[in-house]
Amino acid sequence: MKTMPLLRTVFVFGCLCQFALQRCACASDAQVQPYVRPPAPVRLPDAPGTPVLTPVGAKPGDTVLRGAPGMNPPVDADGDFLIGPDYVPAPELTPVDGVPKGTLRRLTMRSEDSKIYPGITKVPPGGPPDYMPPDLNNVKTYPEPYTRTVTVYIPPLYVPGTPAPVIVSQDGPGKATRIGSDYSLPAVLDNLIAQHRIPAMVAIMIQNGGGDSRGSERGLEYDTMSGLYAEFVETEVIPLVESNCGVVITKDPDMRAAIGGSSGGAAAFTMAWFHPDLYHRVITYSGTYVNQAYPLNPSAPHGAWEYHEHFIPESPRKPIRVWLEVGDRDLYNPNPLRDGMHDWVEANNRMATALKAKGYDYQYVYALNAGHTDHAVRAQTLPEALEWVWKETPKKSVQ
Image (cartoon, rainbow, N blue to C red; front, top):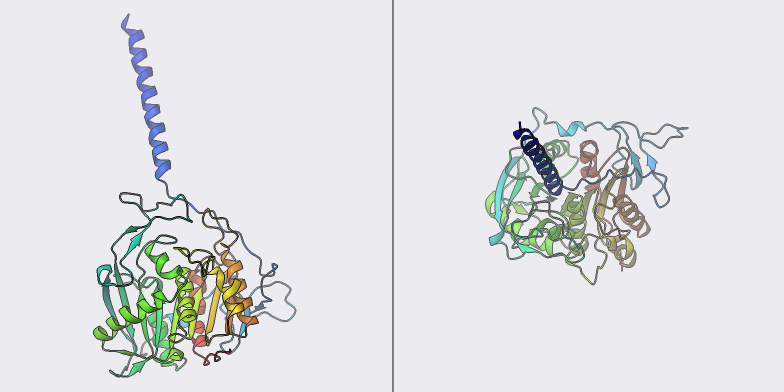
């Protein structure tokens, strides 16, 4: 009977140890849980600072700001438009029997073969993939090799040796059969080319170098305020495409377009801004025209926010034609900087306002019930965005 107190002690001690271990495990699990970004607030389409938007398909007398389901802005109109909240995929996304199909080729690029981008990461050796640097203004980077896929669409009936128009797409697909973020682009190009709504063009869909935001290879490529990424495409990607795919890419900037979403959208605009000698046509979804560039550049201390803050208002108009979109639930302050320059809706509103004031050819689409690079919005708008951006020759520069 004397053993009972001892047994109780052992039992209680065991329970306490088990409880402590469970608490430690929970704490450990909590430490490795990835950061969950809170949902972005809805920004109203008539809020101060928003351009005056024309609801697409609205009926006379409508008092609610909303667009008609499935309707996009006219392909022959500039200005500021409202679409949604209900979306219908465009029929051009679906392959059609009897329509000539382009050819897809996939190429591989390795970091060790690049003279411009040898590869970096913000994740320290052995660190977790979702590592967040403690100070985003002073991010330490480390060498990180990469392999990227370049997917090339060659239009049907292309005549070898003929200079072809081109569209360069950022955040292109990887090695998977499915075309990732560009899954719909080849079918859309097939249909629009067959309908003579756009020129027969080559599409070069470039996978990013990896990671995201400051200190990443993708951030270095897309968010840097310089012509370096366009020069990478020109000197390393296009020669690879031409030598392996039997195509010739035109040098005429009126026949060259760039497209992307998020930081890839900012990269598309940056390609044309710093190299109007190479690109005159731009399409951006949820463009990251915010303060995200790194390393910091004294000539552009606020990153891509500089476009609408200083660059566009204070520079002669360039021969660039721009289609841009943002969602009313787009990103808002997604990192600890809290610098007042991380609202994607405000940034895109300001871009549209700056482009209009300077006399650019532009079409701005404000999408209701839409998040960041919203798939439903892209599925409805991509064909008409492509048709609009190729519709006219961009206005020439003014001095």
